[in-house]
Amino acid sequence: MHYVVCMKQVPDATEVKIDPKTNTLIREGVPAIINPYDIHAIEEALKFKDQYGGKVTVITMGPSLAIDALRKAVSFGVDRAILISDKAFAGADTLSTSYVLTQAIRKLNEEEKVDIILCGKQAIDGDTAQVGPGIAARLGIPQLTYVMKVDKIDREKNEIQVERKLENGREVVKTALPVLLTVVKDLNELRYASLPNLIRAARYEVETWNKQDIPVEDKYLGLKGSPTMVRNIFAPPERPGGEMIAGGQEDPDRVVAQLVEKLIPLKIIPNS
Ligand SMILES: Cc1cc2nc3c(=O)[nH]c(=O)nc-3n(C[C@H](O)[C@H](O)[C@H](O)COP(=O)(O)OP(=O)(O)OC[C@H]3O[C@@H](n4cnc5c(N)ncnc54)[C@H](O)[C@@H]3O)c2cc1C
Image (cartoon, rainbow, N blue to C red; front, side):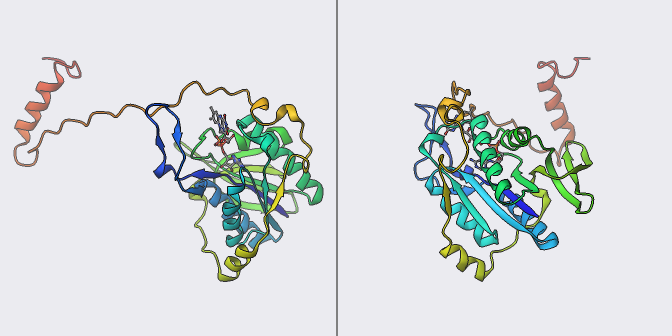
């Protein structure tokens, strides 16, 4: 079994600020982390490997800085880490990103058949949740999104059964392999990196694939292959805090009377 995880390095969302003059993200000095959902995708792939055997490959499309994130993935125990990086890929939107990742997965599949592709449900910076489904659509394989639990993989029948997180419950779905899963954080508990894997990660030579290494057409790459236009980016205006009426425990009648007085002019309750 061969499991491929698509992992994105993102700016730490707790540190991201918007320049109020230019309305663009201030990226300088912002630490980069592995997209939080993608760590759970890696963990699930490692669990598959523990249970069913096989190999875990992690790929990321990004700048050379993303090598740090790939080394971190190796420290968790992944077998192979590949950086997909080329000037021609810069400025890619989700359409172009999913194209390049798909072509890389096709190449991996030729080397060693890919059974399960795992993505996070969304990246915390772009937030579109389009890349995973984009890859599945291009490959023409089933996609199971918002996976919160993998019930079983039946290797004889070549099937997988998962539970998908819905707004008001969950849905149990079964489909054939190969499949693409996008995962939520409820899926698993993360493991700690072991000392041997930490040592391996520190020495690991991350492979880099550029546009010559994967079968891509120039017209689908980077800004040229990205029809998305960003018109504006801005922080929503801060909302004023709510008004508190204190003293409800000591004098509830007074507090209710005060509240009614405020709600009537707003026509939230009738004046009768
Ligand atoms: C409107 C808009 C305009 C943009 N314009 C630009 C631009 O001009 N220049 C620019 O550089 N970027 C731009 N981006 C960012 C870029 O499109 C996205 O970061 C990228 O395509 C991934 O989309 P996402 O972050 O929404 O990922 P999502 O679709 O939310 O990610 C879902 C999952 O897909 C996988 N994944 C996503 N990206 C990667 C990756 N790079 N490598 C491996 N796996 C991945 C991960 O598993 C992730 O959890 C733009 C984004 C948006 C929303």
